[in-house]
Image 1 (tube, rainbow, N blue to C red):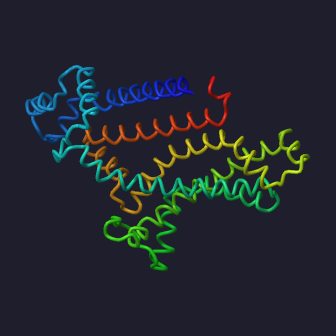
Image 2: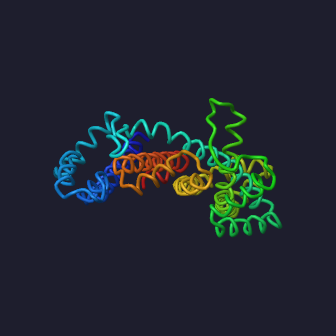
Image 3: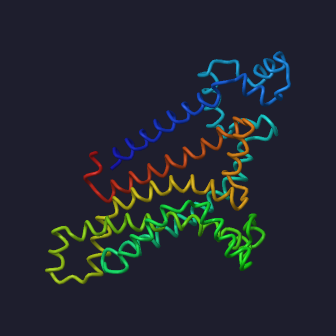
Length: 313
């Protein structure tokens, strides 16, 4: 198992360095354009060139990337070209908002999708047909349409929850919960039905295997078979689904934050990209890549722990 962990960690590190380098090369590909955005479109060519030198954009790309990596390992992602604030400080304020939405949505999706998927696969009938219908509807309706509908229904027509804005947990758990309820529900509508349908397929596939019939012949109850044996064997495909779902939630959270005006990374990325604040964009990309890499690494390790055959792959 130690060898498996080392191999998976090495793969994750290689992916991280490859993605960050390619991203770094893309965002810093036009240093003159970056400098002109900083000093203004009406600036002279001499002022633009001076800004290129001041920002260090005249150095070779590999030197810039190496300098950025050294800063990353020391907890320094540079400073914003426009505000002068450290990127790390900005992310420490914005990232918890995005992370809270993701963790709450993911936790609810895991619990509810497993329950719905198992119930659909075991019982069949109308629960199975309803789940398949909801998975199609949930995948067809964009999340921002769902979010707008929720705002009109529960913030305008019935003013139960706030339409926009975010309240810190320090200001009160109740107010914080109210500010994230509609965003979380909007995310769940698109992710829950799809994840439950995937779990349903995985559980149904395991239920049709020979060892399940053997367990039934030995007199084990259906509950024991499902929760002790079937779920363990369906865990591998389920973990893969959750891994992909976590990555997909990143894109969904960005859109939801824009709709509900939440001060998370989604708004930060949109604003920074619009004005070419490259260090901030690179910081957001780094956090995203780290999160995706860690999720994939944990998924690989858990899959290897559940399925010994996966350790050799």
